[in-house]
Image (cartoon, rainbow, N blue to C red; front, top):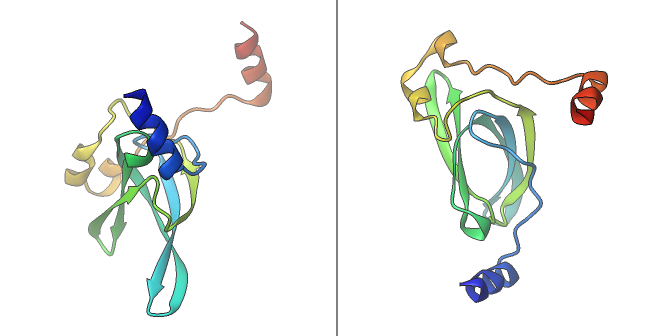
Length: 127
């Protein structure tokens, strides 16, 4: 099994991605090829789920566009992903937040994780 994992790492090296989980709001810059032209399109939304691990992993991002929910699944090892930026860390208690699909308006908001200040963070890590 370890041999398979090693070969997988050699064939499909995983890009450097920031740590993000379900509930986080991210912006994915994705390369789109149209004929002989190439452009970068940004897709900003909430991460619904992360699935798989390593080169075979995927993540699903959901956004509202004109009152309609749009979901897109991105492979982690895709050569078309230019960059991933974490905009906001969300506080959710589940790994897969499909319940977000049935919520609308203010009910569909996700609380932001509370972050320590610099002094409090240093004190918390010293304990």
